[in-house]
Image (tube, rainbow, N blue to C red; front, side):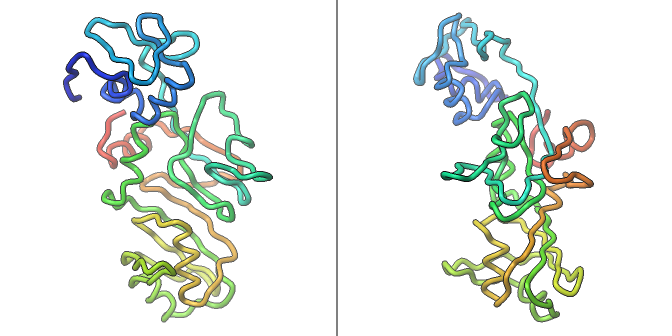
Length: 240
């Protein structure tokens, strides 16, 4: 852990204590969940050496229980910022903790997404430089052929000019294929298919790094723990 030099801004202090990312710390501060010596902290406050910092409406101890869930997002549910008439994960799922999804899975797609209260892992898991694998099963509107599989895996130029990285793609059925990405452009698989003249009729994410969907059905979850969690955290350069 990086040594703390006082005085230090409260959001940076919480980040260095590995309680939350700075962004998540700012949210906690805005929600009046952070106290310095019993007083509600505000954004920009500084912590002096010897100050007592607590987090939570009940002024809980600084060390919080970190929660990590594998959740199966149903089709038709958005992961972030629902518009009028839309439902988000928070609307259909209440674990009893304030959790947030890591990354996105578009409204029309379904499958694995990680929910957590640990803001530390967001950037580490989503940073494209990490090249963390995400695996999908995809069904399209017409038969796939060897040429399509080769082109999908060998870089595809998207509608905005971006050229995707090489990836693993293999046929799994007449109109189905498996793809493993190490990047995450918006609606990337759908746009890759569209560029090659195909339309996606079903998209299921089944793996994020070592974490697999397994037999989870829409709306179901399981808690990540033990070797599965340790392998995930180690893979993004973190300890539990």
